[in-house]
Image (cartoon, rainbow, N blue to C red; front, side, top):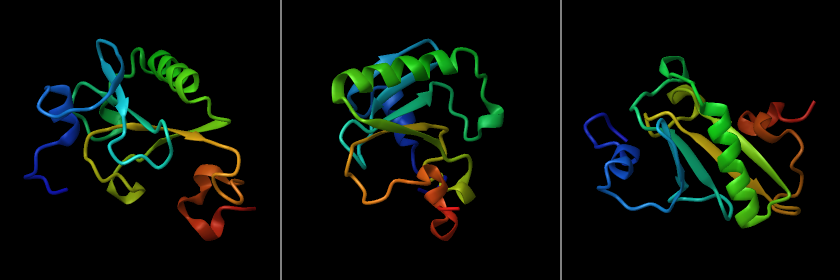
Amino acid sequence: MTHSEPCPFCQILDGAADAEILAESESFVCFLDAYPVTEGHALVVPREHVQYFEALDTNGLFEFLQECLAIVNDRYEPDATNIGLNNGPEAGQTVPHLHWHLIPRYVGDVEDPRGGVRGVIPEKRLY
């Protein structure tokens, strides 16, 4: 995504693009990911367009994340969940609008899930 392209998350927030909304608050919205890695993969985005966590007013964030996780758990019944944030391009952020991934995990979805988010650098995943 280049800086000249419109933000796909802002387009969802403005109603210019479709997404299945799971929850909303004054500051955040949760919707299903358009390119899910597992069934029920959802994103939590702030309504304010900020790229980095350091720029975010986090008031109400953790309560909203917990609410969204409960919705995903109730709807998709995963065995576990990865909750992840890519804070900047060097961390893998491809959409420059801050967002958390709620990724439901299911027994057997990968051969060896040990290391979880440590897998961003595969050779250092296990210790």
